[in-house]
Length: 176
Image 1 (cartoon, rainbow, N blue to C red):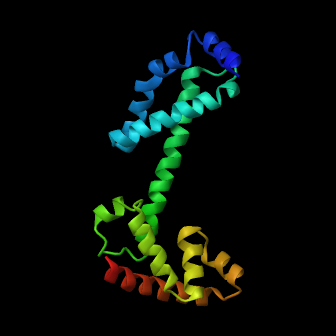
Image 2: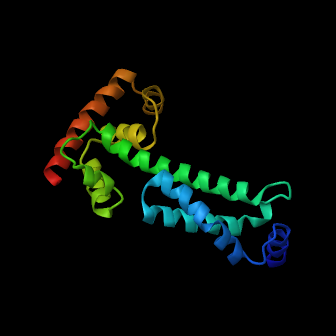
Image 3: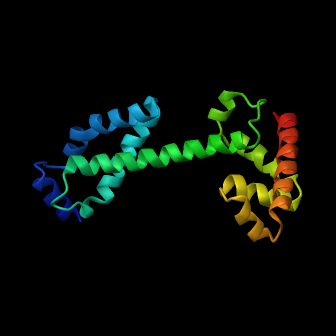
């Protein structure tokens, strides 16, 4: 594997993987920072890009430009990161635009404490409410798909979601 990587690097005018990192680190960081507007997150993405690049170096074809290849890895990671962020914010927003949760708490959604509170709150719902809320908000399924899975009419699914969300609001409001 080491020899293959050295060959690919040599074909691109580089002596070592370290040289590749030095050459493209600012390029990757700049793209990541423009997307994320956060230096720590941009640094994390930059490190992850080079880990992936090292692991997938053999997949680089001679016809590929090294710059384009690094750029593609960077964009794919950024898309993944932004999707995860959107999904986390979207889950909280979809729970009825809960106004009692401060924006700073939404940003801190990754914190285990908040995840635990949501998990505990979900456990306090009826089994059907819990199931439809998980399918709707965590799995992203449509009402029709949920009705097929649960063998309930779409209207019944909507009622369970509505009641479950209202119960979650009350539970979380008391917990926060």
